[in-house]
Length: 364
Image 1 (cartoon, helix red, strand yellow):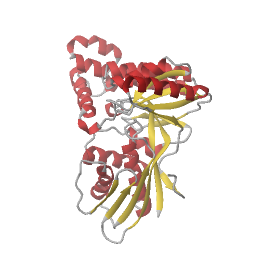
Image 2: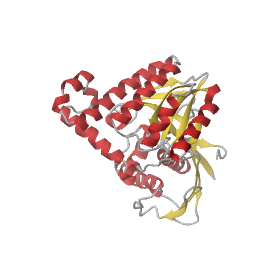
Image 3: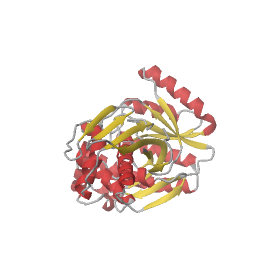
Image 4: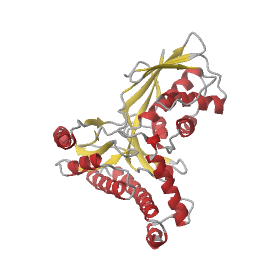
């Protein structure tokens, strides 16, 4: 059996900008989806997942199931359509240590791990660009979540000790050194789960698109803060708020890239705080539990700043924290959160990682 892994990703800043032709600043993280792959005895594809159980399907006739299986089957479907691959029978063993629903993009990691395994095992010859674009297409068309390109891009293109400044409109990108020194990136998962295909995420995408129409521009690249203010009375309140978030978040991404180049993590915390405020008030994708975690973290010694991450409506919070204070911070936020909501939050220390690849031995 051959083994392939794809990392989850953490988006330092640039939330809900990736499907709006904006800028993002993600990093691939040391949490992986692993796929073991070998031939099966017949024409079927057998999938065994550590977390979700087993299923099989005929690669010649694939249709969506409305469940997690679609992240796997969607890759087969898109390769069959786009590359005319005639699949042999296969066995896939899938394991993951990417937390689900915590804003670390477990779904994209599944897609990228599967396409990387199929590409390597069957010798399909896909380029890096084809791997991330086809993975995104599978999620858009087969799964039905209108995600942007960021998650799949980073899972393929990640580089250890670096974040990636990505222009989602042109796919131009720059690796930015991530030298955290006495600081570290930490995650606090609210354990409030969201299902992006339920509509909240797609609704925000539609609202952001409608805002462009109301402002009379084709892209957020054509919209400046001064134009926003000038036209405020001519557009709906919802359109104004959604556009305000996208325009200001793009500026924050550019500022954060400069901050990282100087390894100024106190300043980075300030920008994360601003991002959260915008996501909660202007884009309205946060929730009470996540806001409580953010407010608690901001008061703790050693935390320079924090924000919600991921699609929203639950999920997790990213914080910049002094390494020496991590245990103390985790303990305090867990106690306060449990006291308020009766939920045990999960906490994670995050390290950067390389992108999807074959490995000599199982990592999980």
